[in-house]
Amino acid sequence: MCQSRFPRSSISLILRTTSFLSLALAVACYQQTPSSSSSSSSSSLDKNTASTSIFRPKKTPPFAKPPEEEPEPPIIMKAWHCHGRSQRDLVDRLRQARIVKTLEVQQVLEQVDRQYYIGDSNLRSGVNPYLDTPQGISKAQTISAPHMHAHVLEEILPALQRNAADKQQQQAAAAASIGKDGQSPPQQPQPVKILDVGCGSGYLTACFGRWFCPKKNNNNNNNSESSSSSSSSSSLPILTFPGLVFGMDIHPELVEFTTKNIQRQDGDLLVSSNHSGGGGSSGVITLRHGNGWLGWPEEAPFDAIHVGAAADTFPTALAQQLALHGVLIVPVGPTGNVQTLLKVKRIAQSNHNNHNNNNNNNQDFVWDDFQVTQLLGVRYVPLVQRPE
Image 1 (tube, one colour):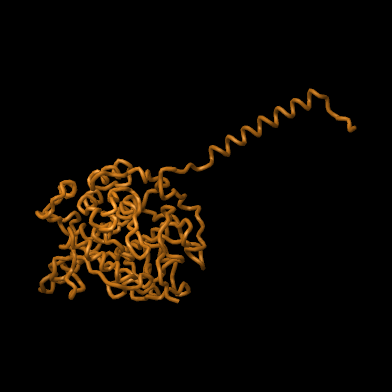
Image 2 (image 1 turned 180 degrees about the vertical axis):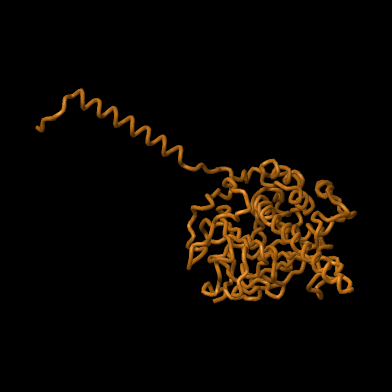
């Protein structure tokens, strides 16, 4: 038997000291472990730690925020607990959970009633349209949960406000210059543009449009809950600057579904079918069937682009169609796994990144023109038919 070289008292002291240090180390590690919200369907992500290989194959993207913005703590949304009994009740719960933060988002969500966008089959089955959950519609697609719609609207709003202010300043400068030559300055301000890729049910497309068109009371609506949700309607639009919205989907059936849904209570938002720019028409929403991976280059650049399905790789063609300071909100990641909701902001404009370029070739893409921020962990249906 091997004899110990240390007295028993010394060995006992060493064991007690080791146990104490192990306990202290375990406590320290526990305190450094980031907490997660079990009540959220979209798990919170540290904005600097998620994998970047699917976002930028050639070079790691800059995930830091712009210098002029204040750093924000990671977002933990109290989602899935915001179920309502009416549209107004749903929005109020989203506001209490701090998912709806601005008056502009609150007003537009109150004015676009979700019950007209989930489909007749869901309504006949007794589905509550005001549940804070995604719901199936058609073609294996879904209408996203209300908390995701609210989050996207909050992320897009600042970019629209900034770019609208820039357009107004540019117009004022141009008017002053033209005035010196005795010519009449332009009267109509240049509108901001939004592209909604994968419009699906049409709900978020309608919200984008309602920002620019005041809600009109519908006397044919006998639903008191729906009427109360429209009580915030006004003769003035929610946003004080003009805008145009372009919605597209790869499935012709869903473009038709979007059109019918919007016509139910928000038909004034639609541009006539033989018109594609909004000028000379009170409508602001134009819809078409098309490949979302290619975007809508004829109408680019866009001040905001939203993608309602997950891209398996970074959609460079869509990013190239952003205006300066515009933002792209897109989930990126593999199908059937946790994806990452990205906010892509255009911070510069190189000659190589042409707005009309519908090429998804990463070799021609200038990454330094863009700033990528990771927002949330999400699960979306795939963005289908990527061109080879």
